[in-house]
Length: 375
Image (tube, rainbow, N blue to C red; front, side, top):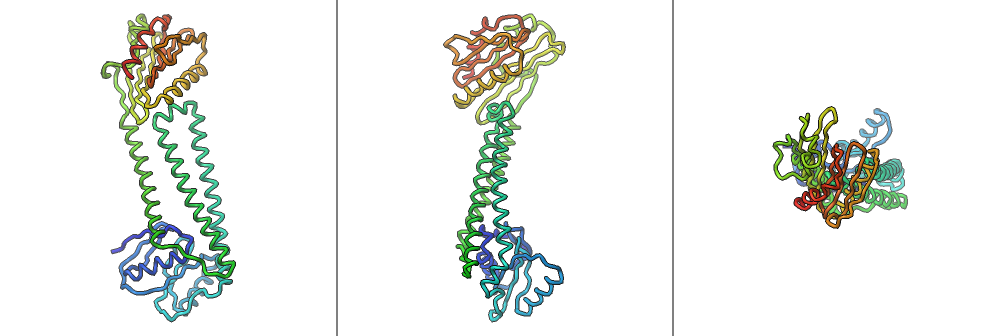
C-alpha cells in the first residue's frame, strides 16, 4: 500500500534530501512520485541500503538526456524520478563510482540552479511584501476601515501578517542556505548538511501552521455567516437598541410602511444591530445602527468614522454638538429633510437617521436610555 511522507523543510539541501531518501530505503520504502518539495509518495519495497543522488534538471534535448542516463546506468545509477527541480538517481551497488567527484564540475552543474533559486526567493519576498501592503491599502481605502475591521476583517489582517511573516522567514532561510551552498561549492568544498530530524520537525510545524490558518479562516467564515440574522421588525426580539419612529416621527409612523426590517450580526469585537423602515415614496424613513464594541478605543474610532462618512455623504445644513455629560460623544445633524443623531456612551455607539421635521435634541433622554440599557 502506497504511503505519503513529508519531505525535509530544507529543500535546497540536496545532501539532506538524499539522506532522507536513503533512510526511507532502509525502512523499506521506494519513491514513486514527489509533490514538488512538500511530500513524496512511496510504495513498500525490500529494506536495503541504497545511495541516492540528486542532479539539477538540465536544459537539454531528450536524446541528450537519454544518452546521459545510459551513461549513469553503466556506472550503476538508475533514474528514480523527478523531485522538484532535481532528477533523482538510485544505486544499489556499494562499489559503484560516485556520480559527482569533481567539486569544480559540481559547481558548474549547480550554478544555474542556484541562480534560479536565489532569483525565485528574492522575487517571492518582494511579492509577499507588495501583497501585504495591497491587502491593507485596499481595506483602508474602502472608506469604512473601522467598520470593516469590526465585522471580522481584523482576522483577515492578522492572518495576512502571520502568513507574510511565515513566508518571509521561510524565504530568508532558503536564501541563506542557497548562498551558503554556493560559497562552499565555489571554494571546492562539499556542502554542509543540516540535521534531518530538525528539518522534518520544521516541516511538520509549517504544515501545522498552514492547516491552523486554514482552520481559522474556515471558523471565521462560519462564525461571520452563522451569526447574521434578518427578520421583519415585528419579529425582532425586544428590547431594541434604537428610538422608535413613533417617538421621533409620529406623523411618519402613522403612514403604512413598505419595509420594516431588523438585522443583527455578532462577531468577536462587536454586536451589531440594525433597523430599517421606509416607504418607497420617501415620505417616511428611519435607519438605525447600533454597535456594542469590545474595546472603548474601537468605539471611539467607530464614532468618528460614522460621523465623518455622514458628513462626506450628505448635504449638511447644521451640525450641533451635544453638550450633555451623559454622553461621551454626541452630535445632532440637520440635512434639511432628515435628522441624524450619532452618539457614544462607553463602548456603545448609536447612529439614527430619520425623516422628520422634529428636532432630535428633544429626544436626548430617549437616546441616553437606549445607550445606557445596551452597555
